[in-house]
Length: 77
Image 1 (spheres, rainbow, N blue to C red):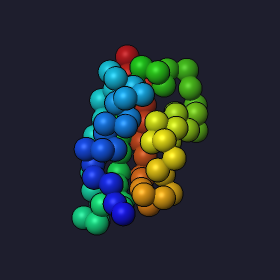
Image 2 (cartoon, rainbow, N blue to C red; image 1 turned 135 degrees about the horizontal axis):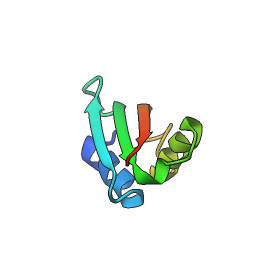
Image 3 (cartoon, rainbow, N blue to C red; image 1 turned 45 degrees about the horizontal axis):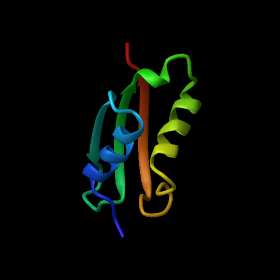
């Protein structure tokens, strides 16, 4: 069972409403995506903490329905 890019973006934006989110399907199979997330909530957080916050926003789908996510994050001013 695959996820579509819109569903990933919706989950992330539910946790970070003002975030800028860009999702790319890397393999065209609905299982391998790249996501770039800019969010104010990341300010003062390490990259690991930022990534953990995004994984939490995905509500347990990472590693299951969503097989692979190449994630980049940054704090938004």
